[in-house]
Image (tube, rainbow, N blue to C red; front, side, top):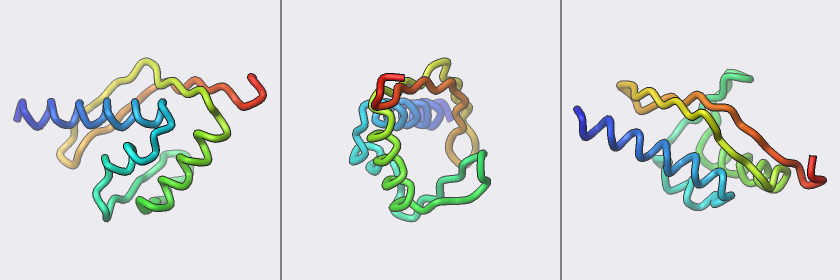
Length: 93
């Protein structure tokens, strides 16, 4: 169980570090081909391809991204992360 917990925490770290860097290919390598990505704001599930497109647009719109105060909870299905997201837009705001 300890190994799985560590693996999930390492996956969460790689995943959000890749988003911060704008490395969408690395984000994609964290997903299973049949992944479903749920967001709490609209409660819809995106497929892998749609989510990677969205993250690419997000990275272009907000060239500086920082996930702070990361809190990872490992679950039976993977992990849940809570965080504070700080972004800077292309215009510097």
